[in-house]
Image (cartoon, rainbow, N blue to C red; front, side, top):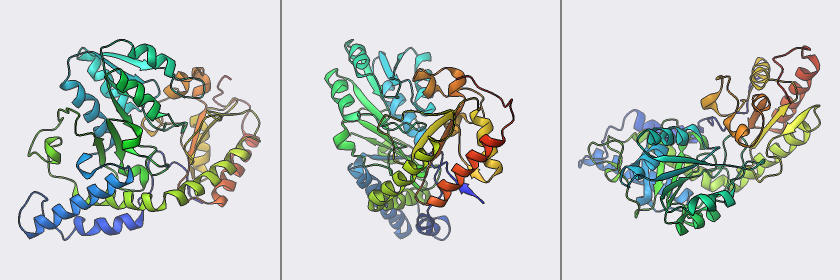
Length: 383
């Protein structure tokens, strides 16, 4: 038995995506910047993919800047804006992905004052605290995610954007986890910059995009041949970008069906999980991604439970893949007010369109078996 339930870490490559990538992996050799026929064909494929990615999030093709992944796009957004602005304050969320927190820490070393916006017990950003911080006039940029990768909690980015713009600042939103799972509209969100990643929506790894309003003054991180409107030098990863485009087109066409399928499975899973003894659902009262469930079981270490499920052929995670195995508690849950011991007990299950009711039944059965057979002393966590 092999059941994959870790789609928020990375989603399996859709065979239909691989099919359109194949010619650009072997056989088609044109550089998109070349003017000969193979080059023109490559350029056409590049721009088709750009239009497909733009269409997924209601953006214009000219607003799509391809990068080497979501992390690079987050870095380009934060460092690119701050490089061209007088030093001031940068506001990031306390539950952001390390792809945002990392560049924020780097900017702090360069003299930027970095503040973290708190969340409530459900993982929602504190808008009253946001208003107080924005009341000071030197906030240049705010970076707050659309959907959390661990809890799945959705933020009201439109309401946040109104406050940020009223204060004269720019808003960047990491939409990596949301895109392809729920409707995402760059224009309607009010964000000035938005990050996407191909492998979260069944595309290839190593390719992402920064969606940016062309009025934003952005300094490139990578200088070179002027590719991507001069904002990301280097010959484009054409096979990856073509795959990203196809994955975006499929996600757009199948979004309603995928979301309904995932939510049906997630709700069935949550119903079953709630029957287990000592269970705690994190962010259970908040609006969440349709595919994501994070929970903890009293007295059980999350990493131990991940390994027990892995022995049974079931792949899940204890939180963000970037921190898996670190031994550190989830910074998302600690920001929500949970003690470190409880945060270390978290387990995340993230479903995909390939999962089935039988998968849900199998994981519930496995959890029940593990809890019944667990030793009396198992890397216990507090509660």
